[in-house]
Structure formats: C-alpha cells, structure tokens
Image (cartoon, rainbow, N blue to C red; front, side):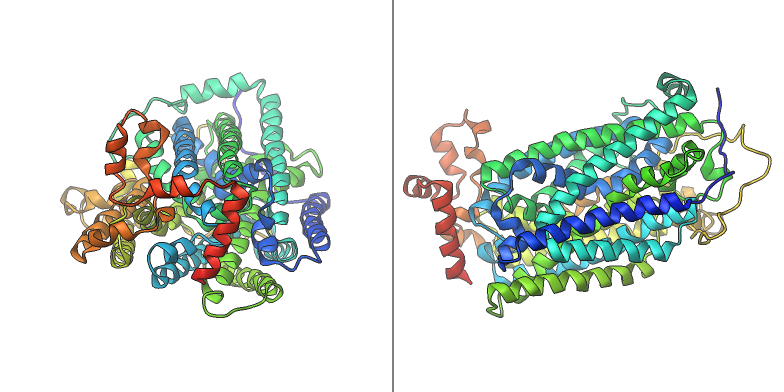
Amino acid sequence: MDFAPDFTRRTFSAGDYVVFALMFLVSTLIGCFYFYKDRKKEDRDEFLIGGRSLSPYPVGLSLSVSVVTGTLVLGTPGDVYAFGTTYIWLVIGFFLAAAVASEIYVPIFYGLRLRSAYEYLEYRFHRSVRILGAITYIVHTVIYLGFVIYAPAYALNVVTGWNIWGAITSTSFVCIIYTALGGLKAVIWIDVAQMIFIVFGFVSVLIQGSLKAGGYEVLWKKCIDGGRINFGNFNPDPRLSNTFWSLCVGGGLSATSLYAVNQASVQRFMSCRSATTAKAAAFLNCAGLLILYVLAMLVGVEIYGYYHKCDPLQFTHLTQRDQLLPFLVMDLFQNNPGAPGLIVASIYSSCLSSVSTSLIALSSVTVTDIFSPWWDFSEERSTWIARGSVVFYGILGILFAFLTSRLEGLLKAALVIHGLLGGPMLGVFTLGILFPCANPAGAIVGLLVGVAMNAWVFSGALDYSWYIEQFQGFLPLQTDMCPTTETSLPSNATTPLASLSTAMSTHQSSTTAAGTVPAVVEIYSMSFWYLSAWGFTFTIVVGLLISFMTCGQRSRKDVDPRFVHPFFSHWLCIFLPKSAQKWTWCGVPHDFVRNNTKTTENEQGSSNATFRDERF
C-alpha cells in the first residue's frame, strides 16, 4: 500500500491547544513546588546545583533529555528520512564521550567541588582564562538559545499554522517561570517528565503509523527498497557527512565537549551526591540516549515508508527536514481530535528542556564566574541574582529568536553552532587536565586560534556550499504519487524562509565551475561532524607550542596534582610498570596526594570547600 500527503486538516483544534496549555501548566507547577519546598534555603548551591544531593537516576535521564534532545527529536527523524539509518552509529560516539567524561573530567571537577566548569580554568591557569572561557560560553549559549527557541516554533508554524511568535513567547515565559522559581532541581525533574512525554510521543507515532500502513514490516521493506537501511557505510572520506567514522569519531568528540566541559552537563554532575554517583549518571544517560535515538531512527524509517512515493519536501510547502515529524503527526492523527496536540506537545517538550537547561547554565556561569570573583555577595543575594539572570537570559533568548535565521536543518545547524566553540573549549580544559606543561599563555592563544580556525572553515563552507552539497549523501526521493496540485500553507502560517542550501545552490550557475574550485575547498568540505575535532586539534597543538615557547615545562612540577589527571595510571593501563606510570606524571606528585589524602568523599568535599575559600 502506498501513501500520499493529505492536507485536508492541518490546523490545531481547540482541544489541541488545551493539551499544550496543560503541558505548560504541569511544568510551571513543578517549578512552583520546588520554590515552595526550598523557600527557606536561600543558598545558591541549592538553587544552582541542587544542594549536591541528587541521585543518579533523575540526573542521568535529565542529561539524556537536555544535552541533545532539542535537536534530536525533530532533527534525527528528518535526517534518517534523507540519509538513512547510518545515524545510529552516533550512539557509539555518545557512549565513548560519556565514558571519557566520567573517567577523566568528572573526577577532577567533582574533587574540586566546582559550581561552574570555568572555575577550574582559574585554579589551573589564571583568572583571565576563566573569564575568557565564561564569556565564550555565554556568547555561544545565547546564540544557541535563540536558535532552539525559534526553530521548533517555526517548524510547528509551517505545519500546523500555530502562531510562531505566540509559541516563542509562551515557551520562553513558561521556561523562565519554572527555572527561576525551582532552580536546577525543578529543571531536572521536569526533564524526567519530558523524557516520559517524548517516549510516549514516539511510541504513539510508531503504533499509529504501523496500523495505517498494515504493519511496521511494510514500512521497513519500503525503506530497504529505497536504500534507507544503510548501516554499513565505512567510507573514511572526511568530506562525507554520514559515515561510521564521521559519526563515531567526529560526533564522539563533539559529544565529549558536551558531556565533559559544557556547563549544562557539569552542573548536573556537580548536583550528584558523590563522584561515584556522577559517574553512574553519565552511564545511565547512555541508556536513555539509546532509547531516544532508536525510537527517533524508527520514526524516521516510518516517515520514509509512509511518504516514499511522494516527498513532502518537494511537493508541499515544507522547507526543512525537521518539519517532517510534526507533518506526519498531523497526517496520522487528523481524525482524532485532541490527539495531534497531545503527540506534538510531547515532542515539543524537548524544546522546553533545551531552553531551561540553557537558562540555568547561563545563570550559574553569570553568578559564579562573572559576579563572584569581584563581589562578595551573601548566599541569599547570590540566589536572587541567579533568579534574575534566568529572567534576563530568557528575554535575551526571545530577542535572539527574532534574529535567528535557519541553516540546512535543525540537527546540522545546532551542531555547527556548538562545534564552532565547543571543540576549542574542550581543548583548553584538556590542556589543563592532561598536560602539566600547559600554561596560561598557551591556554589563551590555543583557544583563540582554535575558534579562529573553526570560523575560517565555517565561513569557507558557506561560500562553497554549492560544491560541498555533493558530499552530503542525500538519498533519492520520489513524487510519483503526489496529488496533481500543490497544497497551500495553513491560513495563519508564516511564509517559509529560504534555506541556506537553496540560496547557495542558486549561486552555483553564476559562480566558479565545480572543476576549478581552489584546493583549499577540500578543507572547507570536511563534514560538519568534524568541526569540533578541527578546533580541538588546533587548540591542543598551538596551546602546547606556546606553552613550550614561554617555558611552561619549567613549572610543570609546581602544578597542583588535584588539577591534573594521571591518565596512564588508569586501570586500563595497569600493564605499564609503576616506574613508567610515574614517568608520565611529568614530575607532578600524584603519589603524595594518594598517600596523604585518604579521606572519605565527605571529608574530601570539606577540604575542597576550604580550598575554594582560600582561592576566592
């Protein structure tokens, strides 16, 4: 049985809007609950890191939802539709990233009892490195915040006719309220509820689509015939966007920067009861991610199987792949009043998670890294500054949403925005944690060069995007069974913006022919998955060169062992002799710390709190 798009009913009913309102109300009530529960605890640690008292289960699920789900839920099904099931290899990259973060970075951060990841940069290097890192993160996250507010609202506007600015303001308003009232605890527990909502939405779509198609095996067979079941792409060409290597290596390093040094993740790790609990949360997050990615992939398979003879992107008003999932929902549930609102609300809840995660992380960095080093505020005043920061960044996010323009798709655009700064930032932390010879000059210059190299590649990729498109790996789509006339926009939908790829494609006919492109374009053509790795590599190499040029190796023995990870003393390297392990310490006295700091985790936390007070 073959299917074609049906636009006979494409707008929300009153019941659908009621369901959306209820989802927003539940989130707001959870924030109010934690505000009331902790009303006598005017402690910024309680507000920003949950009082360091959370178990690994909610933290792990919150990580699964908040770190990538805003882009995963809408972006991955559309990309599976266009590129096939190769995307499942990205899960391996995330698993490796979680393992690296939990074994190398989390023990260092938790041992120092950090509130913000960027405190480490002052401990290890200098206050100027900390401020530079914090400002870089704020700029990066505010831009990303505007994007994650705008893009899902735009997708729903195109498909359902929902007023785009009404969606943006209502979403932002709800996130501001429950984040400012309840702090990190509210954000984490709302993430847990949203995880349940998202799984419910995916499963509902899979069941309804299977029933209408005559069984999921029918949809799967059509995907096999259309070349979408393609797990075996092991081509090592770095220009290809969707291969085992680009997803595992490039995607894995990009995910490492998300888990290891991104404030949103570090903040959750610091909210755990102990370092062991934080490690457990990292691996529980992997289980949640596996569930979400498999469901997202299966929904992508369903989208292709359902529309394999009539591509909505070529025939209808849809302009982006991330609009395909809400498009399918409206088609599948059009005869079930209230159901489209329920399912789309469950999917759209991922937007709430992304926004609230960004707001609480920005608040923590602002209070901890911008205000605290210069002004000695009381705990109560610091807490209210943190709440005010949430409101400020929420309003700023709305303003950036008005300025946001879209790239080729939700998943790619979000990863490009992250890759520009995420890879170099991971490089700075890695310089400090793994290389005792690295010094402040190396860290600063390495970060600036890494960001500059990423910006250079990104700008070059924009100029030659018409050439780079041949490496994207788009699979063929058909319109054999489309209706004879194109459908129109919902009456209150915003006119779709032209995508960047379309604009640049029209440029090809009037510019340089593909056969005469400069050799440097091959660098610009690298997959966007490798953007983090590119900036990371330059940050490490340049950082080490500058450190050696400024005699950083002379002071390596003076580095506090709490700031450096003895990588080759890990149990994975147990085969190395003790003398060889000690040689890799580069003179840092890790054995002294081991022999003289045999305390419990609580005692260690107390000593580290004293260490914090001495430094600040």
